[in-house]
Image 1 (cartoon, helix red, strand yellow):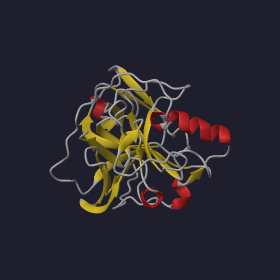
Image 2 (cartoon, one colour):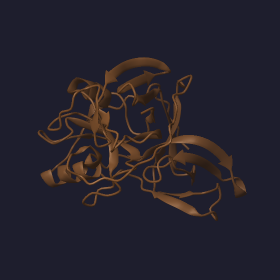
Image 3 (tube, rainbow, N blue to C red):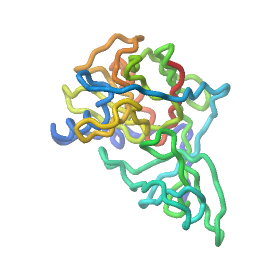
Image 4 (cartoon, one colour):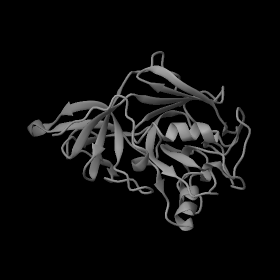
Length: 264
């Protein structure tokens, strides 16, 4: 099985800056990703577990790049209950699915299994997938979001690379806390809300369960057509950065990058 080490994981611009081909796709992205950030949406009460900030940021994180679609199971055995189906490619950009690996096991017949983080609800879910049909990668990048400080810290090889002020979710529509990862990186069309770039996260809003077919996916993105004062809690769940900040981030972190969100 081929392996590759990329310390730190630094995707090329031409592989992560995928331009959406039509305004309809841009609208779908906004509904699916930034629904949690747009005004005028009916909301309910929310609850989220505080992830807490790690005492030490790991230098690297093992990732699994999917070469084929995988069934995720509750236990490391094919007979155990399927908890999710992981497609080989992401729905918005078509990028290959890349997920953080949090455990290993050897099953019946010597089959190697990976315990991986899963996108979607419930937030923070994990599941076991067969190692066969995956490629091992490593990333040195990690994002930690402090909701109380309205701050996004970016780490490379365990060291602070950049710190950005952000707009986070307001109390009635809070940004969910926990352990997540970047699903895909999207370059928005000019004038699209949330542009110029969006990091679509594995997190989903605890408040916005659905909006016009979108799953209330949480993202880290720009402020185009949305505004918001940096350092405030004013969004409907997403995390907004200044244009220069999201440009810098989208140029460096790729799918599978771990994201910790805590505080509030």
